[in-house]
Length: 152
Image 1 (tube, rainbow, N blue to C red):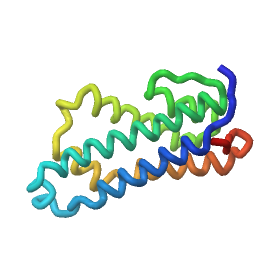
Image 2: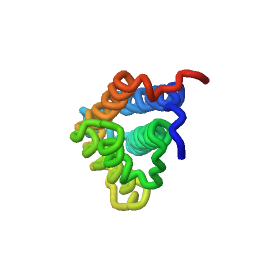
Image 3: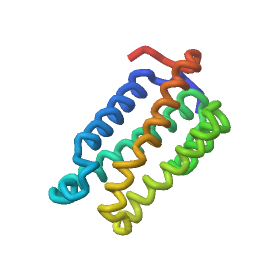
Image 4: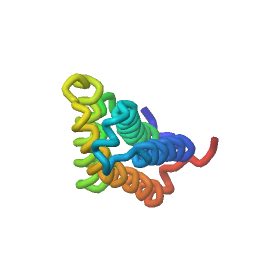
């Protein structure tokens, strides 16, 4: 696979989706546990928006590796590692992305083990992890203009 340039449009679209999903989660009554659990749709909003945010982060990472470096990564669990090793992504962010990939895999494959209380806690207390990675991806774009394709 040859690097042909990271599509700024593709990355920006996914980053905008992540921002939207996080805003949807934050619009929920996360700080009022009783009110949060009164409407079961809140749990499903958390689950869907969180999972889709994680998938978008990982898809951006795979896109950067494929189009910027010619590296095909088939497993989400390897995206963070390869971004750190091959794309100059900060080590702490690469490790955090690996952790988030593991949680995404848990959400998809071990969904029956994730409780509503766990989703509530994560969405209330740990969304900053998703923001850390989105900020890292935005920084990577600014610092690597030679890898970016701005055409449609």
